[in-house]
Image (tube, rainbow, N blue to C red):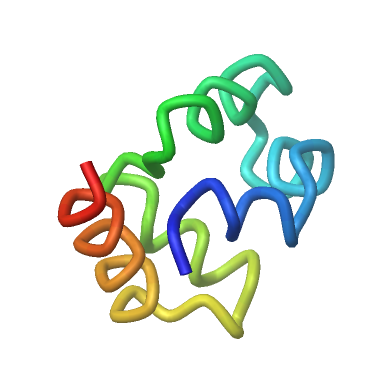
Length: 66
C-alpha cells in the first residue's frame, strides 16, 4: 500500500481533523503520494492500525514505484 492509498482509505477530512492540519495540506500529501516522516508518530497515534512500520513500508513502496 502506498501513501496515497492510505490517505484515500482514511479520508482527507478525517486525517486533517485528527492531525489538526488544513485539508489542503493532506490533499497535497495524497497528490505527492507522500506522508512526511515527521508526521508518522502523530498518524500512528491518531490511527492505531497505522504503525510507524506500516507508514515506513508505504513510503518505501512509493519510492520504489517512482
